[in-house]
Image (tube, rainbow over all chains, first blue to last red; front, side, top):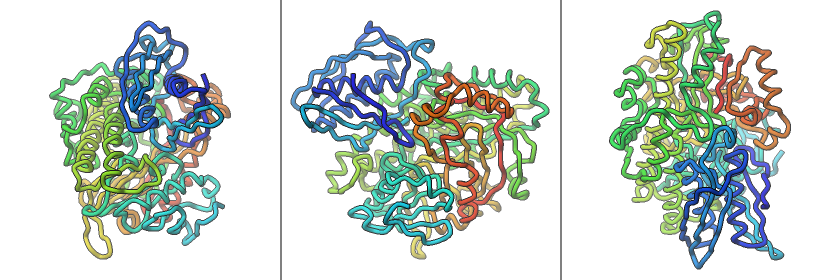
Length: 135
Length: 477
């Protein structure tokens, strides 16, 4: 898992790095969950997310927006992601457990995933991007 | 000082055309010398980016609480010509109609012997923090009416009185709301959260009116020195967040369809008169109305607690006013001597309409609209009044708060929630929050001085000080 929070005055700016594109998506999902919730979550329930989009950035933005939605509505904290990226589409299986205020409470509410500065780079066999969560 | 900006008045600075490529108008922002140290290059670039948007009138503006956000800077204001201009969720934010309301009570600090009990009861009555759900469940039909009517819906359901409607910006219900443009996903996020505060910088505070600067205005607003007040800061919850997410996707495509070149994808926009622009406006207005209903329901919970624990009458807890500080609105303003229909985006900025302006409640018409500026946790909040100067210079707008200077991660590294809780406790300020981390993130030191920010808008005349309120008890989301 490789993500780190960088300084941003108003919101949460995450820098994500991974040797693979699928890893980048999974780490971005982890970054979102770690922002919203404390503690760990057992992979006892799963949801499947399908996203289509013109660019890889569209796929990543769509995935994170959908993950935020699923987490909030299904009341689930996700901890594991299986990512399959195809031409103009991505399929994600996200696994986790129901939100428990005692073990997961105390995180930061994320309102949405911003497009600001979202660009996926590939340098020296590593993918990276910055993602801003509105909180 | 950041290169390229020019001081043009005591509190006024200009960002010339050319600061970023494609600017149609200069940027203009308001700051005291004392606040210039808080100015961030990222925020100035965002201010300049807004100036590249089609149909922008006069200036891309920023209030003294300007800070680095996404799309527009926080504290950003921009008006666009209705016929040739655009509308953008980047000028509103995810939390549509995040706003503040101020209530007065007949209580004084001496009546708060049960302050802890009151705070505990408020904390139980108003769900806060991540994952919090409301005990209320509105039907699909009720949600539809809520999105159309806003405050009036909540009052009709028994969550308030008719005077509350008059004392909200837009009377708590934006016209032009189109629930049809609010997706099923947005509705499913909104239903369980109606009546909840949320998290982050949202709060519910017990305050005391510590100082009155303008007696006639305070009297008109029903505020006296030493009076216990309640302040609520929250927005449109998951429903509004999803409306923004959904329409950003549509508007990102529309930006290309209408050949609009933008330096930041978060500024995705469409002509106001286009189907995409109209759809966003309708959905945004529906979410704004949900937010007004939400704050109204929280008001009802506050009244119920105070009635039960303090023995005061429900109707003696009076709504002074409710302002939106994340919204885009169709308004009429004087532009080059002509009354002109425009769309004003206020992202982290408060409407500050002066005396006798349309939509100022009749009982406040001779004074101007109340402007509520929340402080950060533990610091002063302010009540101001709107002015004619704001109508002339800022499309009737002023600041919305103190404005952050520390990121949340910096705040958590530098400040300890437990220490802040104890320090504020020694000053008589009691805090309740789901987690100490939330206290550290929102500590007073993470923000600019609210008094310096309001002194800038007061001295500029774009709103004028009426009263200062100090916190006694804080519930953080």
